[in-house]
Length: 305
Image (tube, rainbow, N blue to C red; front, side, top):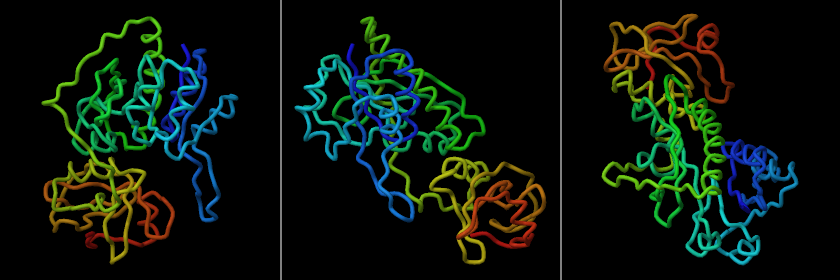
């Protein structure tokens, strides 16, 4: 069975590599166009493109995939596997693949359809998440499900959980292709009444509100780490908060620094307190909170806004 793989960021690389390792016939890879990155704005290929080229697989980086239907048809593939590709597929694109287009989505559908499923699962306080392989339809993440793989969230940040889901998605990619090749495609419809949606996160969504319960503050910190990073203001300057844990509370106003020592920075919330353990001051590098304290940049009694 000839396969086209469509993906762009690092998240999708393990899936492509796993399909190659499993000996699947990847006839082409579709990805986003090269983009300028860094201060010097150097034109840089996507991680998926770099991976495909290293394996000698033809790559197409269409600015608009919908305008390249003939090229897709000429590839002669029966299936397309997508993973964080980054472009909306039109019906004429879907029709190029007789055995369907199948997407690896980083949530337990129908929960968290949309652009930020990993952040949304952490923010919502879910104990588990996973990846779902579903048949792609024109509407957003609504297709019938081929398989689901679950994992525990625990205390992971978004960055840590994303990496775990990336490898889980790699396992799912091979399992999905095996099912398609064997004809064992017993699909499960999504339960529409249980569907939730999540939009692309913006930097301003990560503004910390210490008037909220400590658990909610902690979840936002985890969900936005490492990027775009939750943040607050200290002495008028932005302070990115990259990791934290719950800690014992004490007397003080919300946002007040209760303790600042080698353990980190304890901040009073409306209910409880959080201990900031990793941060990034404005214009500075990521550091342990204890190093920020040692530099006497913060002390008990300061108020974070």
